Each structure stands twice: as C-alpha cells, then as structure tokens.
Amino acid sequence: LETEPTGPIRVLNATVGDGAHQNARDFWNTSPSFETRSLRYDVEYNEFDGAPELVYEHSVVAAEFDDAVLLRTGQTAVSEERISLTALTGSVSETGVVPRSVDPRAVSASDTTVPLEPRGGQITLELPTAVGNASALAERWNGALPAGATATRNATGEAINVTLANGSDPYRLALSEVSLDATGKTEPAYVVPVGSESAAVGETVTVEVRDRYNNPVPDATVAFDGANRTTGDGGRAFFEVNETEALIATINGTGGPTYERVTFDVSEGGGTAGNQTFDVRWIPSSPVNATENTDTDLEVQIFDRQSGDLINDATIDYSFAPLQNGGSPSLNPLSSPEHDGSDTLVFSPNNADVGDEFHVYAAAGDDVDRLLVRVIESGQGTMADRTTVTGEDTAGGNNDVTFTIGSSGPDTQSIEITDITVESVETNTGNTDVDNVEDTEGDTFVNAGTDTTLVSGQIDVGTTATLSPTLQITGGNSADVRLGQFRDGNQNANMNKANVELTLQFSDGSSKTFLLTL
View 1 (tube, one colour):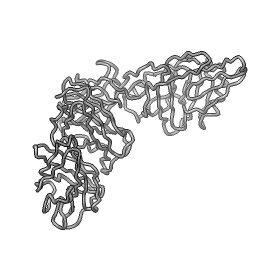
View 2: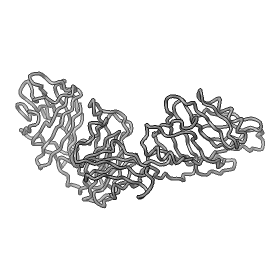
View 3: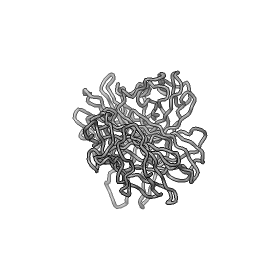
View 4: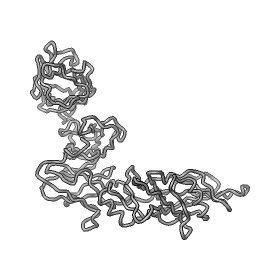
C-alpha cells in the first residue's frame, strides 16, 4: 500500500464568474494548480494470482488488470452543476501480511464554492493518473460522467482530461486537500469582505481569509490598518471602525497582490443595515461578566432582517479579540451549525486572567454582532450576571407572555428584582404600537413563583414599574412569570411570534435586558 506522485490537478479554459468577489477572481487568474497523489494497493499473495492493483484517485477506485481497467466505484468529481476536486497529499508506504490503517485528515475543506465560467473553450479538468492504461481508464470515466461531459487521455498519457458541457448556468467549484499522513497545513491566499465594503464609524466590518482551495483559514492574522485580529474557525476576523478614513484590511504583510487586501469606505453615519439580509444579536447585548475558571453560556440569535423570523441552521462563525494583551479563552458552540435560529456559545476563560476583557464576535451571512465579556474573580458577579430568562411563550393566551426567570450560582447567592421595564414590542404583524401591558383584573405581573401579584395596574410600553413585593429567587432556583395582558389600543394584542424587549433591575444596582422571542 503506497502513494505515488502523479502531478498537478488543473482546471483549464475557466474563469471565476461574477458571483464571486473580485479578489477571488484575481487569485484564480494566477492559474493555480494543485499537486496530488494516487493511493495504490497491490495484492502480492503467493497463492492468489491475477488480482488487480487498486488505485484510488479523484473519487474513484480503479482496478488495473494486465489487459483491462475497471472502476470499482462511481465518481463524485463531476455532476451536472458541481465540480468537487480533492488533492491527496502526504505519503504512505506499507507492506506485510497484517492489517494496516490509513487515517486521512482534512487539511482544507469547507462548504465554500466559487462559480466557474468557460473562457476560451470548454471547461476541462486535467486529472493526473497513476493508471498505466489511461485510454482504457478514460473509457470507464465516460460511462460514469453526466450527460454532455466526456473523458479522453491527454497527449502525454499521464492524465485524464474531462471536458464539461458548457451550459447556461455556471458550475460551482469545490476544492479540498486531504492528507494521508497528518502532514500539511493551510496558508492564507486571499481575503474577501463579508457583507458591505462600506461602513459607518462605530460599525463592525468583517473579512474572510481563504486559502488556495477557496476555503476559510483559521488562526490567520489580518491587519486592519496595523491593528491585528486573528480569524476564528470560520476564517473570519472583525474590526470596529473608529475613524472616517478608508480602512484597509491586509493579510501576509503589506505590499502584496491586490487580492491580499480589502478596502472599506468609511462614513460618519448612515450604516448599511437597510441592505442586509441577516440580523445577528447577542442576548443580552449588554456586557457579560465571566467568572474565572468557570464556563459561561452566551446566547446568540439569527433573524431575517426583513421578516423578523429566526433563521434556522445559519452558519455562525465566532471569534474574539482581547482589548489589551489578554489571554486566550476558548469558544465552543453547542449546536452550530445545526440550530433552531439560536445557538449557545460556551465561553471558557481558563487561559485568561481576572480583569481581562474580550470582544466576542458572532457572524452569520452579512451581519455581525459584538459582545463585551469581562473575566471576574469568583464571587464578584452581579445579580444581573446570575440571571437567565428561558421558555418564552404565549402559553397563557395569545395576548399573554410567559417565561421563566432563573438564578444561577450557589444557593447562598440569591437575586432580587426590584423594577421591570417593557422597552419595546414588535408583534407578528411588524407594528410597534402596542400601548399597555395589563390584565382584566388589573394585575400586570402575576404567578411569579408563589402566585404573588408583583405589579398592580397597567404598564405602558417604555415605562418602568416597581415590583411590590420584590421578586427574590435563591441560587439554583427559578420563578415562572406571566406578563398579561398586552393591549393594542382597546383590543387585545396578538403576541404569537412577537418580540418583547424586557429590562430587569436588581437590588444591587445592576440591570439586564432580555429579548423575548415567542
């Protein structure tokens, strides 16, 4: 069992289409090729004659006999709309009569694709082969390709040329690199913006660093006019704009090719939210204290900016930047990329010191949100830090809002809520004209754990109501709360799928805002 160098994979007569950023097109114009190998299994048992040599390359297993070539598998390199090419790297050389294993490792892989369009002829894939009879192999490829695509032996007999049918729609090209011996690493090749290349002072801009296979590069350094940021697992880095001058993000130092930098036009105001599709929100958006040596859950939600609905299974990329020369916390999403519109990020400050502060970024689609996280000493957290709100629903009726307030921390540390503010309300029809929060019996805040009425009378949206008595919850316990009824003028408001922004104030002077999504 051994690998054989075969030469480079090439994509001929093709250019990256207009659906990709200019930097991706400029990098492609450097005519990249991708060195690859084939993996051969040669059976040489004394009492087993006539066995073929098996060659794995370009998604197929070819059985090479003395006088014939057969395919033992189908091919996945070419479909009617997609090209998927994998460069096989690393070395394997094993012989003997006992089992041997090969542990492939993805050096570069993702769901990223780029559009390919023909340039100067039909798109042709040059796939180097270790099979000696390339003509016979090409015939087998012809039987496995989609309609309109053909395979031939190239002029030297060392590769199969797969010529694609040029249709009206561009092919999507996916590239990857897999190592058979755990060697190899990905390197930054070009950078693209995520979202608009225009921003206002105070907004956050995002770039994605990609390697030569068009896949995101983690742990790459991006310089935003000299201020360095490190990319997260999704290859993205973030920067808050603080000056009106043009902002330049670069990789691989300065003075490189144009595809190694992105320039953002910066204005004093205006923003780009009106052109965006995604709306990323940390819940809550206020600064969070993370106790030393303790995991802290951070919740993020992804909305469709037009409809207001949560977007399921959106790819979320997380990253952080220390405000000073802080440590290196770990970020572990619980459900991303499969989620129901929200994800919980576990922030572990194990490698950070008390007093360190970090900006933690969540990015999805064309939007990014930033959260300030401080590492505090054990026991220093405020009541707001120890408070959670879960289970937002309309279980009490479509004009009621129910939820559960939880108190984390030891049972010796309770929370005491003194005031409540309903900041804003957005109903399923998109209006924000809900006037009052009231109950037919005049009770606004009821069933708070012990069937206690905490507020009598109505609360106008945007005003603060004092709880009487205050709501006290010991550590590790919770209280079920109903806020009812919401009124729109003289009628009950339909709160199904509504958003309610709720602010709780505590007896220690802290406060915390929650977005209740029903």
